[in-house]
Length: 155
Image (cartoon, rainbow, N blue to C red; front, side):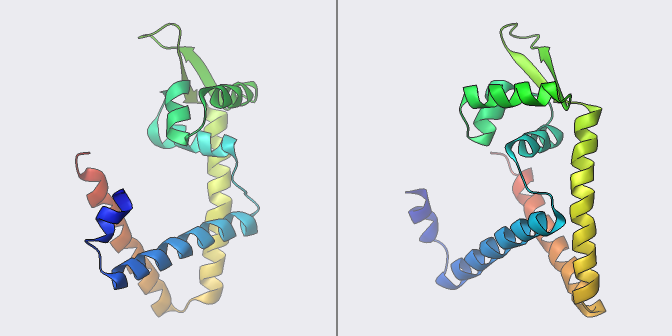
C-alpha cells in the first residue's frame, strides 16, 4: 500500500534511477564483502548495530534486526561468550538486560571495516582516473548530504 502511494508521486524515470542505484549498492556491498573476505553474519550485524546506535536491550535489538526475541537472546549469549559484548541489568527493568559493545567487539568491527576499506581503495586506485575519483568523491558528498537531510527530519 505504501509503495503504491509513493509510486504515484515519482516519475518512471526517477523510479528507474532509484532501482538501478539500489541494485548497484547491493552488488557493491556483496562484492566488497566477498572480495575482502569479510562476509556478513548475524553476529557482525548485531555488533555493528550496537556500535552505530549504542547499548540496547535484547528486545530492542531483536526488533531492529527483525528477528525473534529468542533468536536474538541466543545470539547475544554467543557474543557474550566471545566477550565482544557485555550484558548488564537494565536499571529501569531488572528483568531485562542491556547489551553493549566491548573493546574486543569494537576492535573486531574496526578490523572488518579496515579490510573492506583497503579493498575499495585498491579497486579505486586500479580502475579510476583522477577525474573518475573526483566524480566518486562528489557522488559520495551528494549522497551523504541527502542522507543527512533525511536523518535530521523528525520521524
